[in-house]
Length: 160
Length: 79
Image 1 (cartoon, rainbow over the protein chains, first blue to last red):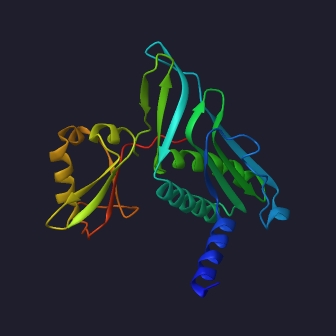
Image 2 (cartoon, rainbow over the protein chains, first blue to last red):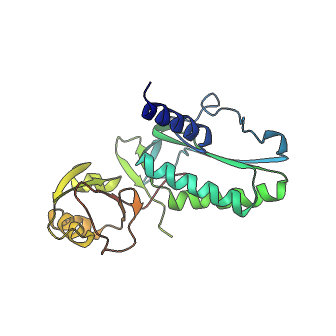
């Protein structure tokens, strides 16, 4: 094996190990979100989790049946990883992870999960809503609300 | 020189394509954006963020180089 290949392979493995944001095709089932196995697991005293689901909204008397997400995956992951690093530093968190769906997710299914790991509940409770809100306004993901009359509406959060 | 323009979300529908090659002469972001909106005037009404080579552009004077990737993104809707 050439040196360059070994270096690239090693970088790839390190990147995978260090990853904190995951974009997953389809709904976020428990099997798709693996249990946390970070090296600092024994220092964790508190874990706070936010779960976002696809809601059966009514839009102009049509029912939402699913959300369809698209993204520029590299920009989305890089933005989310920077966000997590910032909150780990600011709140002295032990770790944090974000999972988000891509593609179609039917109503009632989970499409977004944020996990915050801290020594104590105070930091976990404080950091969680801020990460969730900042993710929604800064990470480039785009959602289409698919309706039961076979039309759709683009979902929009506002720029802040 | 040519740059690659990528459209996301609703903007891809308005542009009618997910991506396209655009020829510019003055190698600056403002020129590329003007060409984009000249080709599709409806885009001028849209609010969007601009990324150059995966980094958010801070102003329209950002210089561009051959084969740069310009990503145009509507307001985000994750979560």
